[in-house]
Length: 281
Image 1 (cartoon, helix red, strand yellow):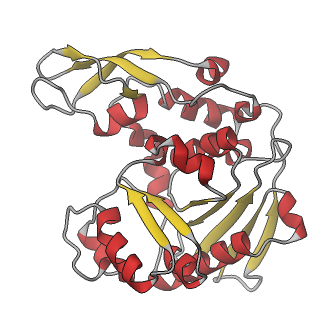
Image 2: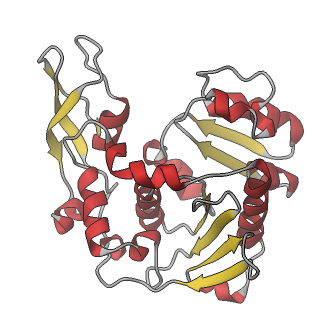
């Protein structure tokens, strides 16, 4: 996807990805094939090649989750491109896009076949659907509760979903091409939220799905500030020590470690809530 943005000569691209390179990654994207090291941040690996290939574009990034990106980046952004693989990540992105009034073009691979992909468009208008509108009320409540959950691993609820997502370099390229084309060359119908579903195993390979806003979705309610609760007190299961991370609950749960012994086995004891979480509780 970022390769396509470079080919189109975009002025500036900022990337956020907290993930690191695994052995399975190196065989797929061209950006990760040269000088890639297992355990290296994906962002640090791709920045230099992108700057070399597409010098007319200003490339920047940070090895963080999108919820930890500085607000300045959102205020200056014209569009968000989402390339994630869980409902939780997409809901976090939807919350930020709603907060900063930015349209989203989302893409991903899905289904048990590696010939299936989907690209979705979500305008920046409150009157149309966001990603969270597509979920059931129960699923939305579950995801919002995960933001403040005391469970250490947030991916426990996502396990089945992650297994179902597959990809190949060819299909990934097709979906990424469609994603960028859909976002950069808008049509009249892009005032509404919709998805284009591709299934190359079927005769009718392409299907457009219209999305309607859910009256129960809380992301369309004006919520001041950043919508993610902050952990004010955490406890280490290993040594029993307590400390104040003053970081997002989601960040502490995924990346936090005890300030005393370095253990990642933490319990969220206290957090600073906000109106969005309260509206779901």
